[in-house]
Length: 415
Image (cartoon, rainbow, N blue to C red; front, side):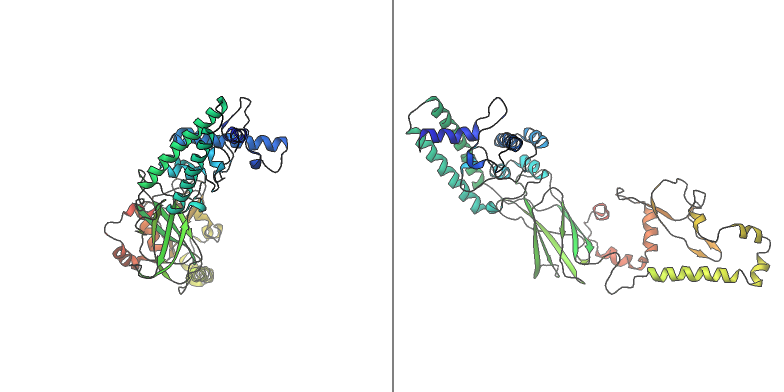
């Protein structure tokens, strides 16, 4: 390789001109070479090079500042720096992982960075690193045998500095360990064939977590594993598993994955989850139609009894008042004494129990009413007990209490 070719390679991947453009080898140019496309592509290459330099310096604040103002895909293979010359392509996340820059890894993941499939094992990662080191040493040797000029010396210093970075990566990979297991995992039924898992990991950890392994079984000891799923999107601490067998009770466990492998698993709470949905629970009556029929029958009975002589005799003094009222329950949901002391706009879950000519109210003379708000993470104890009674599960409370482990954090379980 001639010195001219070497200068073209290194100048293309390192040199940023004062007018804000970057020269890159022709093979990395976009197909559409229009001025607007070329400008966007050059700007992305500059931002990617800046992000790469911050990662190599373990400067998370600088990396975040670049990512917030940039528009390039963080999963794009590197088209700048010496990494662009390698046969096996790298990503920004690969560089951060090989340097064990945990904070930079988190920042990249928050912007959508995922594991590079060509380096999804420690063996593949070491092979890629060895290949990169060999290629770098070859370039340094070729430069040493070339006529020494100012430009050649500059190129040689760049390759030598890059070799030091690769040596840091080699030392890191030789001491890498398995990540810590999740601290807490909560599972809830999402439908008849899917579940939602909430995974909480330690905030301070030595080894980066790049994926979750979810496994499920019908046995608490997982003697027979029915299936598994790997989640590589780490932007949220949630995992949705679909296409599960219906009408089954399953146990779930989650392991944290790093570049060396997976941690020990953490069992999800509750231990068993019956796959079901709000509108379709296998083997159980829906109940809603039955309640509507009861309300309709109650209304018909009231209408019929009001025409009887007994009714007219007992309620003759209040007949005029009764006629003025609307024949519906809407009056209870007006902004008044029987509705709520503090009425705000929104959706409410209420119950109307009518018996012996009276409507059941709370101790403060209001209808039992709960504001439906997804942003609320806690619920008053009285409201919680009322919901349990209204959901006709009061008799199952004992069974539910016995199934809750003694060391389970109840606050986490109710969120």
